[in-house]
Length: 491
Image (cartoon, rainbow, N blue to C red):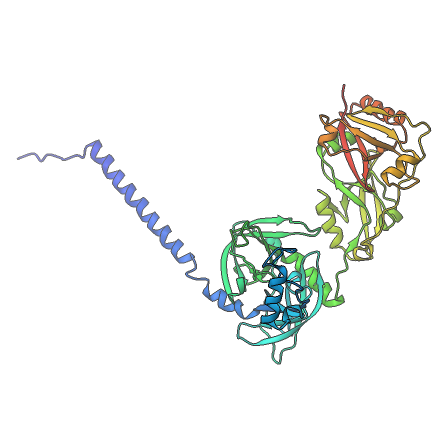
């Protein structure tokens, strides 16, 4: 019998076979994932755009403006050619250039109820004599203003339609995440209904307003988009397109939409009262910086430091200059912006608990909130104190200081009963100069104690050093406006 040889694969062949199998397996997984992603990715935004477009409107405003008295924009005022061009205009226009004329402006908006309430920006309709709303269908209706809020640049309009109008609902802007897809709709550059898409680029942006809470987006927003809606992928409005950051007036991918959670509160008040009614605490505040925290012996640089307490709810409740507000109505206060927004969102007349740090100890004070709008323009209470007995001056902490005298009060234009130390000179190489102190400023407190003469200030400096403090906190007033400044103490 012949013996049969048994063929056996070599180790190299086994390794190559395994590699081939592994590569095939990875290829299969890659193709499967690609197919799944293709199925998950929406083919088009058209269905969403078709759903929400009927609720978006174009807004045209008309305003009567005074006629021009000369050939503005043609020749410089006072030019020897000015009379010539004026006569030329009068001959060709029959003198119509001097008559009042109408000026038109364009913007966007959106319907929020079937009975015809429309939201837009205040700057879109501000000063308008006539407001025309154009719907996606081409129908046009005249609108009346229900109320406006310049602080958030929101306006609420109303149209009377024969049939229920298509409308959209507000979504939760706090749920929007950076990177979420959004759609902007409106009337950019007067081109009619237009859609652009992008993502949420940033949250909680502040521009210049007290109650700002903007969503930043790279969805194209241009002039004419103002007042239009910013939608999430569920078709809910999470912002009102308000402003752009641009060197040339066109979109460069940095647009701002007022967050819907701010807008809804404003709209509800405008609908109910025709005006806003924000809570008012009645304090002037500043952020607690690292050097201020060190000067006050605080562990963390957080909270809102009270710089002044004029007549109002806070004064009646017992809050005082130098208190650090740690929490408001049970919510921790991180900084002044957060406190201002929280107070403004609180109902007028509500009793809230305000926790403050005073002289190293925490205490809670109940405050009945007033109304912000009633307090606008209210004057601050003047500071109290005693006049310094001797008009001596001295240099300290980079400042040349002198007690307030009647002559200095008159020169600086301050109240007759204000007491403190006047800054007569500031060393430009000093920390005091870097932190903005200037001649004419008045120091009324140091180490959270009133100072009326040089000796009292020197005592505050010595006390801070003995306590191991690296800096001294001073209350500085300029043109009546107070702020705290912490200056480093030299060894």
